[in-house]
Image: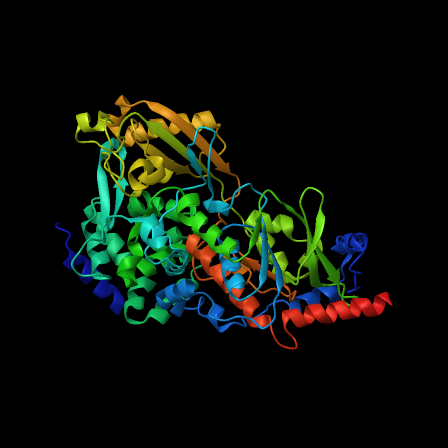
Amino acid sequence: MKFTINTLLVAIAASIGSVSAFTPLSAVTQQRQSTSINNSYHQRTTTSRQRATLADEPTFTSEEAKKQVGNDSFLNQNLMARAQNGPGVKNEEKLKIGIVGAGLAGMIAAMDLADAGHDVEIFEIRPFVGGKVSSWKDKDGNHIEMGLHVFFGCYYNLFGIMKRTGGFDDNLRIKEHIHTFVNEGGKLGALDFQFPIGAPVSGLQAFARTEQLGVEDKFHNAVRLGTSPIVRALIDFDGGMDMVRELDDITFTEWFQQLGGKRGSLDRMWDAIAYALGFLDCDSISARCMLTIFMLFAIRTEASVLRMLEGSPQTGLHDPIIKYLEDRNVKIHLSTPVRNVVHELDPETGLPNRVLGLEVGSNSQFREFDTVVAATDVPGIKKLLPETFRQYDFFDKIYNLDTVPIATVQVRFDGWVTEMHDEARMMDVSGDQSDGKGAGIDNLLYSVDTEFSCFADLALTSPGEYYKPGEGSLIQAVFDERAFKRSNEQLVEDCIKQLNNIFPSSRKLNCTWSSVVKLGQALYREKPGQDKFRPKQATPIPNFFMAGSYTYQDYLDSMEGATRSGLMVADEIIARADGPNGLKSQTRQHAEAKLFFAN
């Protein structure tokens, strides 16, 4: 039986047819007492809880923030121009804003807020910026990363930010439009999207021709995809996306096997993609998560095009943002943990109704702010939120969000690991092999035969800071929870052994250096039923906001998701800053009330 593109199209066509008490400004001790009172919230009454629920769901105020959610946001390439040009407005009132967290979301929010005329400070517990996209140098000058960072072609907002900071053209390297699977024994499979006709045809032929699946699995794969929301979206995008949103309560495996999908396709292709997206297999990951990204691949040709940084995230992504912020007098306080969110309670309901500021640093210094933004990850927000905030269902739901652990392993060799056809070339590290001139595969790689589902040779893909003269490959591989609990030494040993298994010729090479970075709680776990727990950026407390890739936006927990959330929270603050009921007026009214009660 010969499987052709026509076979795939026929299968799809057939399927379509079937188918408070005030705190004096001078009394920090009273502020702490207020927080202490808040922490006794466990005695809250049912009435208080009901009131909290009624006040629970703030709506989007900013028209710009609204553009980042909903079906239109997936296809809106104008979002790149918005991110590149900035908010385009300056507020009449100047807010003093404290941001907790110097990851992408926090720094991007600070960019827009500074451009809108506000006084912004960022507090970061680590000695470096970047959050989950952090990188730093060890004592020997090796660049260490938290994870493997790949830029999909549909990262419109992040690309706009990089253009705004001057980092897009020089700091990203575009890769061949092909997603390569490396199997045991060195056998390669691929989803090759290179085709004269763009999406969706380029995607259809990629799945039809892939060597990763056998004939029978290709046929059943085609039948299942043919009955998917992706096909409906080709003629009715809104209808297709609405179907995807309704699939958050089942796993991808459950969805895939409902109407024709077989285990072979899951085991040999889809699992690797699921692990790469969310560090979960198809039996655990939400169908909504998987189908969201494939919806983009089907509609936009550029969505599946991959880029990687010229060098480290610090140099290529963060440094231009830091310069942008420093040029606008944004203060970034590194190694400065936030100890407490100081706030007040409504005297009638006992609910938190205003944030006064932050206690920061080793001595818990009180810093007063008009507005506070919590731009953290999931474990960060759970630690940061005062217990009293959980009287609101809005905040309490966050504690239902789970996370996944990952371990990023870097191993350097005295030759080129991914070069399998020319042994002499594999062993040759002489001369200048910078700028990607080394031997092997210059792209993101997937494997279903290793415990790291995605990996890359950074000496090839990002040679600016990862290639070293006289050295060969620097493989960066991300292990998921299957291997997380092992010792660092065992992870390095297992990484080398598994690389040898899929690149047999690499057994002749020696490891010259290694590094392991573990994140016990990394991305939020994209298991079924999690989407409803993701909070919006505006909260029931008028001057307290949230950002981070886990907050509600229509993208995944990713660099693009973090960027979207940062832009959205800035838009919400800018939209609420001015006017008689604006954030600055609220601060003035609060100060007047304090003075009145003090007298």
